[in-house]
Image (cartoon, rainbow, N blue to C red):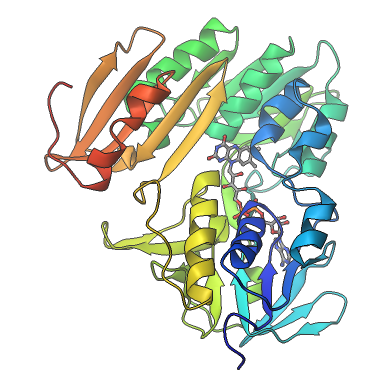
Length: 397
Ligand SMILES: Cc1cc2nc3c(=O)[nH]c(=O)nc-3n(C[C@H](O)[C@H](O)[C@H](O)COP(=O)(O)OP(=O)(O)OC[C@H]3O[C@@H](n4cnc5c(N)ncnc54)[C@H](O)[C@@H]3O)c2cc1C
């Protein structure tokens, strides 16, 4: 095998993780071929704007692309777009067009896809939002007066509901849990998010699972487990995501909820790494594997894995390795650090839960494990070091 600095590297999946990995390989001095393979026909683009500015029309559609085409030419990154990888055998990658790649290293970055409503509802008035084509399909369905039911109030469902309401549409948001986003952002922040939805004029039905989606002759009908029904012209299903691992079925990789890796992205196969939403990295601090589905984690894993592919030690993480995500809803920014979902204790350390800006610090067994900010970016980030070092949980900042 040539030196890792000169070999051929195939990155499979051309989105934020894949592009970040390809860029990082070059930045670290790799001189060999880099192939970036993606199944979508589009130039690699960013997903967060799809449920925010792209939906509300407040950003230029062209601004979603991660890089201009010339960037890839300049960096010597060969794009193979519109071509899914269908099989991995050792480090050999088979593409749908029959071509076989035999690179010296493979970085798997095939992400995740939207989870459909269980049992399906194969009509074009029931949609999910994961990619650019989904976003365009959704936009085409929106006309003044459209009544939309959003199923699932996680961060994508919540953002879609907020964006559609901003467009003046009639929106109902249905969530099985008692509060929106509570699992990710904690109950305190969830109550504030619920308030923001209601104040914006969204009808929110929490605490009742959806049992079925039916076509009622001229509209979609959502049947709730408690017998209630909600009708709408369009249903947006936001029930989370499923990692894209099917093409790896015969590869011998350890696949559970994503491709299981160590804390460098290395899988059990020599020279094969996995990053981003498709990957379940071992977290030494928590002592278990975790699959993050967040933009910053995808980029951070790309940075770490790229260094290891080249046999280098990655520079210390600027984030201290603390997971982070954000969500924009109703003009408010919700940000989360660490693992609020694992907490057994919480304290408000800035602002007030009834107000429009606060930070909640989360602890487990007396140490700081996470924090959530609501319109309080600067105040939140002050707690990152405490989370990174598992500092004792203070009762008041
Ligand atoms: C609407 C939306 C809004 C979001 N907003 C936020 C936010 O505000 N904050 C935040 O932290 N995160 C947000 N996220 C999550 C964030 O976008 C993801 O964590 C991130 O996109 C993960 O990047 P990835 O490259 O690992 O995977 P993906 O972005 O899923 O990309 C994987 C790529 O691989 C392709 N692929 C799949 N299978 C194959 C195959 N066999 N061969 C070749 N290519 C394949 C896929 O089609 C896709 O293009 C949002 C996600 C969505 C969908």
